[in-house]
Length: 299
Image (cartoon, rainbow, N blue to C red; front, side, top):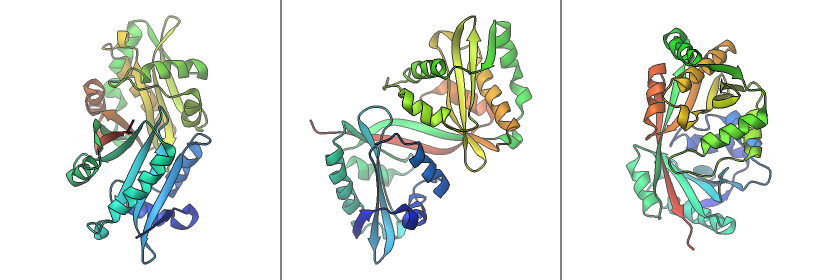
């Protein structure tokens, strides 16, 4: 197998064909290009293909993580070509790039049902870091009225809901909430927030306000071709348990429907039981379970 850089104008369809034998994301060329456009300037992003007789039979990718000194690694071999050493060849090519980039750690992901891929990665030093559930809400069958009591309950307690007009203030709340995660990873920076939210035409951001304080936020961004991505829903720890998160999720879902989108997708850690319970109550259905594996760099 010959490994070379992927040339998107020529190779992208075949690259995605191989990617989709592991999972369906990114769904198509438009979504792949969107991710490239949203990447921060100067970010380390490398896409490789492995060819046998001119056919692309494997892909590899290394992409800078938005927060922290790390890269995401991806390696997929087409099913019909597995067991021939192509994975080892692509892994060696990726390791050469990792040595150049020299991150503190490397993250990889596999389907939570793909025990063979997990074992293959663990033999190469990766260990389970976290488990996440990706879910989808089909808006055609969603009944907002079933959740309006959450808005009424929060408003009765003095909370009001408003579109977020101050992007700097929204980012400050977002960073505070994003930092309140089980593994306490570094929150995203302001530039990442601008690229992923502010620069996306048609984004929706609603905040929960109590007096002068912003106590929660929900952010949804359009996702091609006809859906939306729940970028974040969160409430300050001291204000949880009062239905504010449910109210925020409802309000952004209603606005997403008004804008003609057909679905919303989101991803949550498997241990985030409260948010997963809210998602189930709304009608979100799991579309993928993902294991995130991590390998620390040698010191």
